[in-house]
Length: 102
Figure 1 (tube, helix red, strand yellow):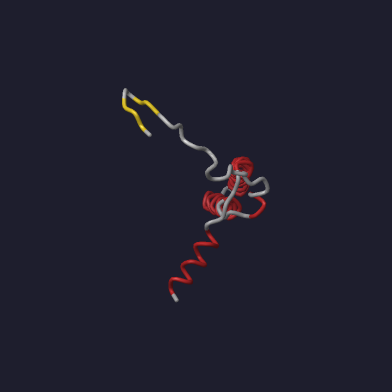
Figure 2 (cartoon, rainbow, N blue to C red):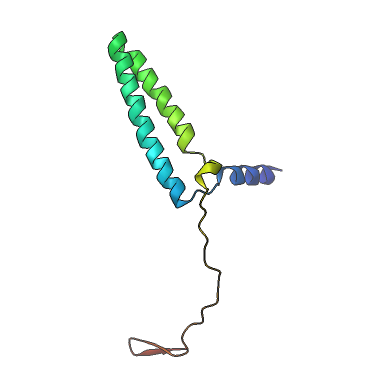
């Protein structure tokens, strides 16, 4: 019972993202955190409330975390096509440091 629940949770959280998805996540995180920081600064400055500025920054950071960390399906639009296993035969007589391998 517990093993089935653990396996379902593992499949849910063990998503795949490709290299283009990683680049997209990096861009989104950089832009979003910059905007969150600027908004938090201006809210705090205009209202003269540092506590509110910190809360706005924390809320924005949590929102960016929810955008970036889960492996959303749109981060895997260009999956990598790996070569098939096998098909390459090792050389018959391989010599390394004067030792023969067969």
